[in-house]
Amino acid sequence: MKSLVINTEPDSPYYPGVFFNAETGVCEISGESYMEEAYKFYLPLINWIKEFVLNEKRSLELNFKLIYFNTSSSRLILDILDILKKFRDEEHDVKVNWYFDPDDPDVKDEVEDFEIESGMDINLIEMT
Amino acid sequence: MFVNAPNYNNIIAYHGPISLNLTSFVGNYMKESVMADQRVITRIFKVFIELVQNVSNYSAQVNDKLQDEHQKRNGIGWFSIDENETDYKISTGNLISKDHGPILLRNCDQINKMGEEELRELKRQTRKQSSIRDVGAHIGLIHTGLITSNPLDIDISPVDEAHSFFRITAKVNKAINN
Image 1 (cartoon, one colour):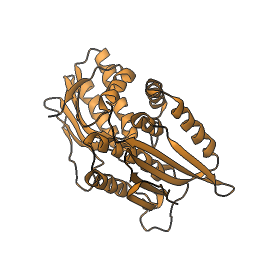
Image 2: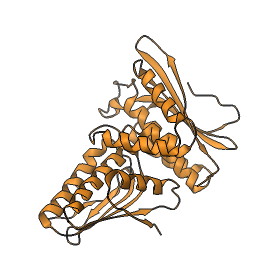
Image 3: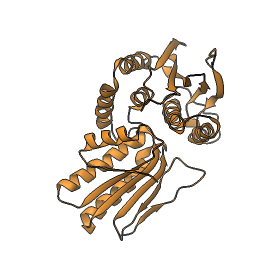
């Protein structure tokens, strides 16, 4: 299985950077996310996660390092968390870390809402 | 068209088709030009993106004479960012279908009557019910009301038999309480 890599581009800062490492299972989504038709961007990420967990059967760690995401993107992030929660309930080894920007006064509440909605545990870590 | 607000200084205003690149450019321009606590700038950026993307996605007016096929679908409307001593005011305006007016009025009235925990619960319920293929998650106005902790100020004026004009203003306080 190949890693999934999407680099951030200065002329389209509304797409986040993605590095899903197929060798280590450590995955990262970083930057800003407020593109049009968010599902077109996120569906390949969701499919990669499903394939990695179900076919590779190895542990997966997802690190969110988003400094901004709009409400459309939040719907897709919730979908990812729902899927990871389902995998965790099936005894797959999955873990989610959320690196938060201390200059964002609302992010802790947003992550707490994701936890409540999905039932997935999220480790909050301050960005340095 | 633009709201002339006494005692407010204008930071930026625009009227026309609203593309994603324009939204991104102005949002980043605002980040560099506004002199405020970084946490306040973060909130202005969030509110700006949500409200302006609503215009781009849902305005009842587009310009199909533009060359680019994608730009032809960008909604037309206006936005402005203004500041006074105590807050930043982010406003947008766009044409809507007359049928949508009462729905927007009802939604904003509901948001304005709710406290923080009620808004968070409404946001969670509404997001969960939305489809991942929808243009938005239908929580932009709830989220805006939640993070600004101020009532949404809206106005809907009749334009013709089929359309109304929708104007919304959200205020971001300069003082951060949390």
